Amino acid sequence: MKIGVFDSGIGGLTVVKSLLEHQLFEEIIYFGDTARVPYGPKDKNTIIRYGIEAVEFFKNFELDMIIVACNSVSAYALEEMQESASCPVIGVIEPGVLATSNAVDSHSNVLVIGTKATVNSKAYENALKVLKFTNVKSKATPLFVPLVEEELFNGTILNATLRHYFENEESPDAVILGCTHFPLISDAISKYFGPNTKLIHSGDAIVEYLEKRFDFKEKYPNPKLEFFASENPEALKKIAKRWLSAK
Ligand code: DGL
Image (cartoon, rainbow, N blue to C red; front, side):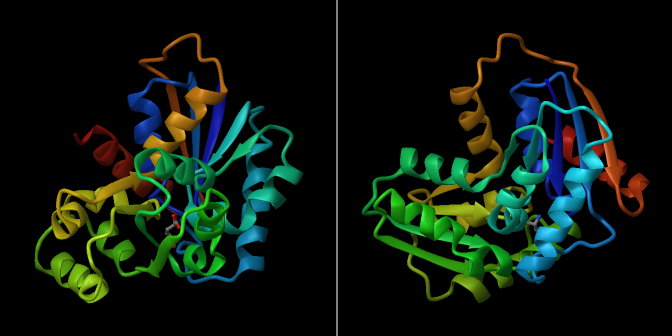
């Protein structure tokens, strides 16, 4: 299978990393809209327009599937992207919600963290409600995005930001890392909330979701990878090299 992975910028590399670890695809074409990132503070119509433009971009490559790594786009633009694409378009919300329901029961305290767009959309909350989850809270934590982009994966600034957002939060049973960037600070988030809080990672969730729905017959340990960006593709390629090879 030849797939496209779309993100607003570099964060979607965390999803690519999970896909590579599980060797699911023969060819992955990544497109990061680095010229217009961040999407998180933008409104729904803008995000829908950008999502449809990404589908148009991917029409240059005869893809078997598009994976929307970006939570903000998955939350606001998935249907519109599905309507304009000629292949399946899969977002991260449904996989994340199913992974949550596999990890904890429906009475558990679940905290969703993400960009303002993702949190305002209530996409996770509504999907969890359908599965009868009763104690779901969400919180926009956009400051983590630039910290991750600066590769501040630990240390005083990150710890102060964790305190800023979570000082009054009791440790939840599960935290949905509802933003592409957050898996890179999952160790710090886990340390902050303690060992009883389960973290839900979109990349792992989407792998689990795909493996249940598609019959993957072969493994591809050396897939063909191509990176495209709407601005400065060289910078994206450099980060991809670093992030995808890190443990
Ligand atoms: N990729 C975005 C997300 O997962 C985070 C960065 C942005 O705001 O564009 O929601």
